[in-house]
Amino acid sequence: MDPLRHVKPAVRDLAAYSVALPKAPVKINQNENPWDLPEAVKRRVVEKALTRSWSRYPDLDSRELLEALARHSGWRADGILAGNGSNEAIEALLLVTVGPGTKVVIPEPTFTLYALLTTILGGESVRVPMLSRGAPIASGLSFRGAAVVSRDEESAVASADPSGPGRRRSLRMTFAYDVDALLAARRAWGAPVTIVCSPNNPTGTSLDLYDVERLCGDGDGLVVIDEAYHEFSARTVVPLLERYPNLIVLRTFSKAMALAGLRVGYLLASPELVREIDKARLPYNLNFFSQAAALAALEEKDALAVSVHRLVAERERLLARLADVPGVSAYSSDTNFFLVECLSADPKAVFSSMLRRGVLVRDVTSYPRLERCLRVTVGTPEENDAFLHALGTALTEAGMDLTTGRA
Ligand code: PMP
Image (cartoon, rainbow, N blue to C red; front, side, top):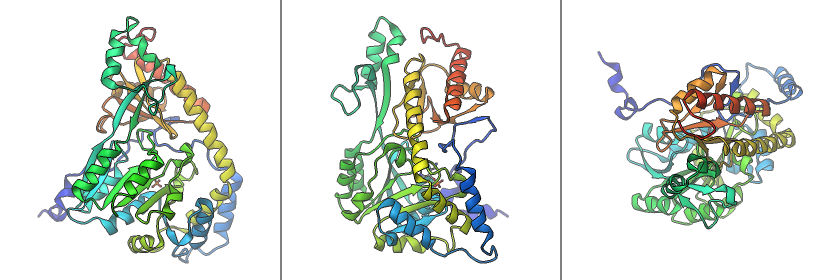
């Protein structure tokens, strides 16, 4: 007897979504907000929960929350769907659009759930590699500036420089979306869905508004922009919803809004599209506790914005410090995390060594193109100092001479 033979072959072949979660005092591996909501706010939510019957179903459509989200986002309430985490909103969207053979265009590397769900539903993800570049930040040039060097050029510069690996100290890496390739893939496959995470997990890359418009204006294929980290980039594509009925935006309360434990996310699109996607949302998907907590978090949005500013300042402090650490190269980021590339040390050894010192980052070496990378979430200033210290020790342990950057 083999009951497993009834599971779709494409599913049997898949690796499950998983995150290694060893316990560590400095937990900077899941892009969460390190600062919890104030206890007074949590108490308000608990008090509210105590006044209503737990034996009765919650509001079917999270109506009060949708109204508050409309005020928060500037988009109409009948164009919003609330989910049990934005994961559920992504799932509902793909359930109503993807069937056997459906092509879904997805940049690479990105959040793995898009391709996982596409495969489970019988669709095929069309992967479009991102571009990666090194920009000499010492001279103040950004990727959008004129003098961008490719990685190959950068290596040539580094090896030709008599000061050797120390030259790398002035380089910060960056990824960029290959918008022409995304457009070409959409056209070539007639793809009904394109999903772009902006800013992107795990590279920290944003897609310019202009490029979002290029995608939306090219046929009627759906363009899904996952804005899970938009608060850290101070950018949003929501104003474009008015103009592009094929645009869908995803957002979450799990990052800047400090509510990962209660699972709230939402999707914004035209009311007509939302009505269709809503058919795949499970009834009563959002429990009343999470609905109340999301409403409370929205009332705290000014305080949460302060925590976002502090995290962005900490991110820049960390990236500046890492520019002086030989043997690693950090990537610019518009989010509350960034990639650190281990130039010669084994990244898995660096990961384990930091973990032994109580610092847990995310090992992303299994992602395409990120074979030498670790992803680091920006934490409290104390956590960030602990990370810098653990990284320095881990690199020394890996045989790196921190004065020369040579192993
Ligand atoms: N999108 C992206 C890009 C993410 O990184 C994550 C969480 N890691 C999610 C969506 C899912 O968030 P949620 O907790 O709302 O399900």
